[in-house]
Every structure is written in structure tokens, then in C-alpha cells.
Image (cartoon, one colour):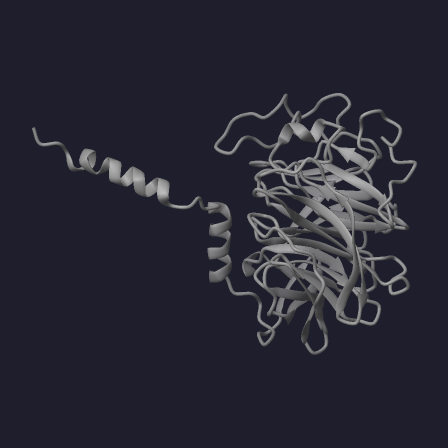
Length: 395
């Protein structure tokens, strides 16, 4: 009897499949998309549109970055930019010149990992501390989110100190969190749950949390769980999935966070010390491919989001605007969208209503960071390699 070709070839095909190295297909797809996407170029005409009756233009400060993640404005005018592959660049916003900063720690640049956020000490340059978060290699393919600081001397980071290492380390390559925010002398840091959803509800681990430190990396005595037996004292809030945006409201002083849901359910949350934000017990999202997660969308003792997105937009950097360039936008939240490819503007009214507007949708940008600059313009960091300045229209 003659056997079918597919049956004869099956052992060979199986052997070839086993011999092919494992590929992180989501990361591979993202890199293909990035290679095919064109950022708004420095020499292109500014893009113009309006939102809420406010006209604005968007132009590129530079288009020469490689997978950038965050920016920090220096007092003398330059901008520090992190690139996920493990580079810090100093950008002159007038000339567009980039200068690499040496002394960056080794990073785990796989999946969603790499060099993440950057922040300056509130009194920078005295002291000249620069703070970094990154996915740190921990051996055997494992990694974790780490906080470090170093002194910026010229174009070099010196005297690097590791301030905190999130525990436990994992062998996954996703949900690192890593966003930083100084509020006075306190430093807030987000940590994702690394794809281990159940850990977000446990107080004896750092994953799925927002952490709070003093500027030197020590733990404030008034942290909500500092005196709780068995709890990690750095924890400020818990029950988060993958917090990617962190900002202080310029008027109320409240701290807000954006985080990724699964399939649907991205959230904007107002933080309260010691509060539980529900993941994975409650969520407005669902399993990839369909299927309920947890116990529903609400439960006693767990916080509700101020706003949520179904379907997901993949929320990233968060900024509350307060400045003279766009007075009509004062108090509005601006959120980068990595999946829905736009700048998300939310107007929050006193009665709790939220009005949403989607800007720059036709540019196809994966906006990783959003910050208000010293000139009161908005600065948008695109993973396609551009830093964009959003300024009022001439008219």
C-alpha cells in the first residue's frame, strides 16, 4: 500500500519544527511593523489639526531615534531620551544633534523588556542624580524590573547604584511596567505582573504594583503596608496588570496611572494609598480569543477605573496638561496609544463625566511617552523613532 506523502513527510517536518528556535512572534511582528512605518520626518511639513476648538501643529524635533521609551527635560534645555536597546541619548532640541551617554547598565532587551524610563532628581543638577528603570538580566533567561540611579557627569553616568530589584524574577518577557514619577522627595515606580496575574493580588511580591520610595531608594515609613507583616513595604497600591503611564494632576496633586487590560479593559485610575485596583479579580477586559476573567467588573473593596477602553488602545505615557500654550486644555489628560495609534485626549468634568477625543489618528504613530515641556508645548515620543513637538497653530 502506498502511504500518502504527508504521512511519509511527517517525521521530517516534525524534526525541522523542533530544530527551529523559538521566536517571540509578537515582538517579531512589532519589529516588522516598525521597519515598515515612517515617522514624521524633521524635514516634512508640520501636521495640522484641531481638538476641542484648539488648533495645533505637530513637527518632528528628531527622527533619528531607535525604539525610544521615555524622555526627561534637563534644566539647560537638552532632553534625555532612553532607547529600549540600552542607550541614553542627549538631544539638543534646537539642532537635533544626538550625543550618546555612557555608563548605562546592562539591560534584558527581549520581548517588551529593555531600557525603560528616565527621571531626574527634583533638585537636578544639584545633586546630578539620573534615575533609570530597566529589565535586568537575572540569568537562565530570567529578568525583572530594576530601579537604579547614577550621577550624570558630562556625557557619562557615574557611580551607578541599584536601588531596588522587583521580586520575584520571572522567565517571561512582558509586563515590566517601569514608569517613574517624582512627587516632592518621593519616587513612584510601576511594576507589571509579568503575565502572572495572580501575583498582582499578593502583598508579599512586587509584581502588579505601584511602589513608593524616598529619593535615595529607602522605603518611606508612612507607606501604607510598611507595618504589615509579610507585605513588601515599598508597595503603595496593588491589583495592577501592566501600568505604563504615571502622572501627577497639576491642580489636585492626585497621582494617576494608566494600565493595559487584556483584550479590552485598559484603565485610567486615580491612586489612593493602599488601594486594590482589582486585577485579575475584576476587569472590563476578557481573555484573548474570548472568555471571562475573574468575577466580573466590580467587587467590594476594589477600585473602579475613572475611565476604561473597550476595545483596548494599549495605553502608555500619561500627562495632565497645565500651561499657557493651550489654556483650553488645562486639566485634560493626554495618553499615548500603542495599539490604536493616536494621542488620546480626555476631558474630566467635576461631575465625573469623561469626554474622549482621538488626535493624530492618520499618522499611525505608536506613542510611548507624552510629556509637557518647559515651553508648555506637548512632546510626543513615537516608537518609530521620532520625538514630536505639539504646539499651537499660527492662526
